[in-house]
Length: 424
Ligand code: HDL
Ligand code: ZN
Image (cartoon, rainbow, N blue to C red; front, side, top):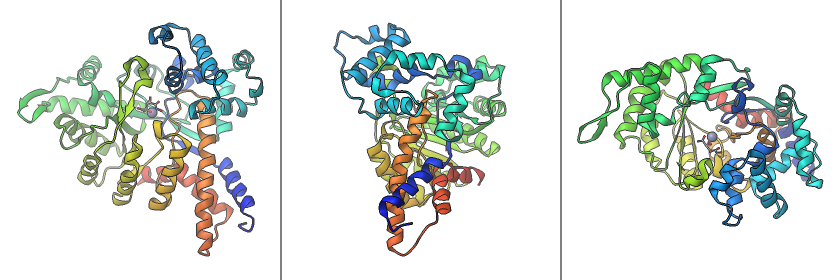
């Protein structure tokens, strides 16, 4: 198999193409969530990554207000014109739209948005959704379900059913980033939660009843949506052990609930929200976090499972080393601003060299259903390139792998290692 390098590379690539994937972090919703499930050409084009890119080139007379007041198709038109017609769609998010059209069998050479729109208008979601999962070869996705979001909460309270290949995750950012709004939602749902009081010079403290009620809220929501894990994102200023309020919520509510339910806690660290608030979701920045706070959390709870991804490239090596040092830590994905070929390749090489296959190489973070197609096509290409090199390095030391072992290793870093970690 190794004699001919080109042939070996194409064997590994075809195995990756056939490897099915567990996509462990997305922002997709089941069809029962109605308009919350985004799909189709206009949603693809108005992805917040492309909105940010639009404003890097648009004339200043295109104000944010003007853009946000446009219809979805007007927004899509202006993004198509600026980023696909006036310039080559070279960015990862722009190229992704083209890859998706191509994999769907559309003629991208014509660059004819109206005929592409016509094709999408003829798709029926109940046939299109399984088609996208088949093209992208996805076993299942894990959603981001926010009980503090009235729309998301309402769908779960009314339906609570999703196809089994839409698994849930309980997303609890508001507990940490906007305590007052979180408390209002919890009290609105019948939990007797009072805002923390500043009764010590060390900072805020919850009364015991409120902390117990926060824990009950997490348990009750978990019984309803049956999450695979709890999740929260944190700014680069994440300061477990120093930030008293954050530490107390984690120590006295999240960890006890995760322990009672046997669920992992996923931390996504490094997003600085609202750096440019005019851009809404697209306006977040990135910052390097102090991962010694993460080490303290991992040390404090050796029997709790933690899933972690970080946003800053500058944090990746340190996180990968922590993945070696703490058996209760599973690192995953090339998150958001790291989800670009140059950084995915660097991160995947670093992770394989330090962790073998004990990590999850990628998650799509898809917000639009059809993005699954390009996000996984692009990732498979990079992973097959890295694995080919690593198998060749092994071969130089006399160790040959079979096609079955390549397929096993590929699925391991594309969901298998995660599933094994969650079973511990
Ligand atoms: O916090 C998160 O889960 C992030 O992934 C944000 O949703 C971000 O806006 C995003 O879509 N990144 O890809
Ligand atoms: Zn996300």
